Length: 303
Image (tube, rainbow, N blue to C red; front, top):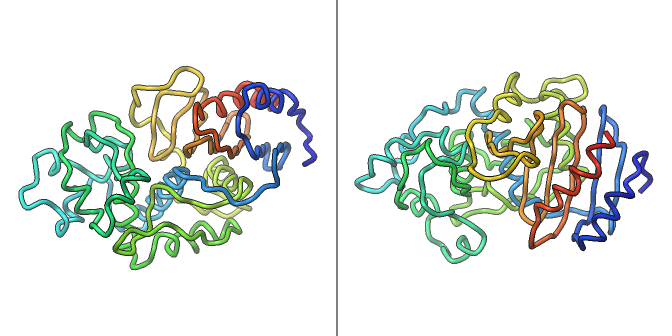
């Protein structure tokens, strides 16, 4: 596509590092200012960028009084809870689901492990795992938190997660309602498996860049963007280039930037000080963070 930005350095870096990047899109001051692609744009599996969509659903749910972040998890999942919950499980709050500080030792509901569960109830499976750390103390990336929050929204609203989000998010942004993965009980899976084009997912970043306002109309609850993207917990990983903190299913970055991230190089980067958004889709199955670093080093300086 034609681009007002000279993305030669990005293209060369992609080629030199043999990065499997399909599409890059760049917006600044509300306009599409740059793009590069190795193949025609299409719908990609954005993987865990879905978590940032679920975070947005939580923002709506909180503003509508469906629950609070200080609610104990077991208050909402009594039927699926173990007969004798551990003290740490009793201490787990919805806030801990949102910041990846649940206290579980292992990642749960990853791709292959979901398949291995067959028709087993995912909620009971998650709540039956040992909570080895005090909730709120240790960051451990986990699909269980977004999943349980998505289930709670569906129970409280009486709609699937995508039905709930359609009038609140998808329709106002001019997006088709995505078809989400379902668990054995029919609940939409709020952690992964979001199919959108790079340009479509870029709209989420632009909405957040604009503090929740779209075409002059407030879409997100006031103050939600600031709360969701604040550095709520240290991840214990990262560096000065990509950041070390985590918000509410958003990754914190230096200089006030933040990103949504899906495996294999799906990145949605919001740079408020530059009034810019970058969206990248790739299938980089090894060293996917190099896709992000390449964009930061070759594209961000142009903005």
